[in-house]
Image 1 (cartoon, rainbow, N blue to C red):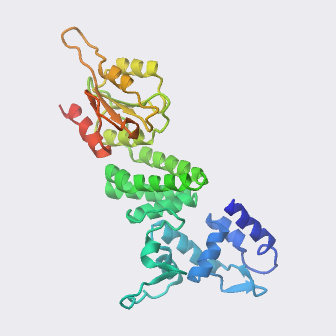
Image 2 (image 1 turned 180 degrees about the vertical axis):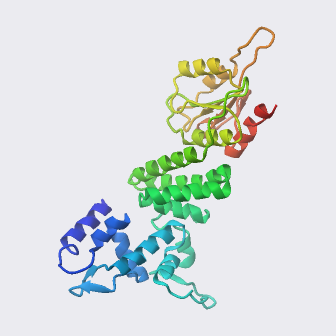
Length: 336
């Protein structure tokens, strides 16, 4: 609603007057940001145009637009807006603030508070700088920048650390935002999740060939469609040479049982996001499955992953606390 209101204001005001240069609405469409964001950068950080048509209406020259493009590129890396604006303007580094004072970021904001937000209300105060850059790109629905930042984080930190320390905190911040905003940011969460999934596929090596008794089956329990945690586990295991068979979301009971019998896996991982979908009887049934010739029958190790399995542990069902623990639990069958 706010974005639509902003565009409407541009059409009624700034898009109307004649004159050279681009209007704020045209610049916003070119950069992929909201017109209100550009006006905020003008007001707070002095990134406005050098001239205005009729003394009031903004008209942006190529040089003005170049500064804004620089601002977008810098904030996409996670740099605080005030620092990004200083660099976009080409200013000298700010001098240290006198004792007892804070360096101003904007009206009524301290530098520390500015660094603790993703530029749009996402709480990421203790997260890595990459989280803020990814969050800003997701909020702008900037696909190219988002892909670049996700791939860079995975390349720099490794898949497991990038997921745990960069991607998950960002996903959680976006989730909290839409939960407290009347679900206004659902599209941002879906957009971010889709691009995380794509980054995982682009960084995952080719599928590992089956080895008897070494395959791991990954599936969501019936009624569960949150597949992203299993996708990252699949990528991490494939990276380590573990043969994986991924069955994705909401696998029916009969299909899960058939897949286990046909695959004869060393391990089965069942993901449940909510307690309403987690079924301990189903997990126990899979753990009790056996196959093979008489005297050498075997069954799978069953791992229950996700917040849906919270509560008392069940004998015979492993419950790793996170991705690193799950990977560690599933590596031994491959090396044995």
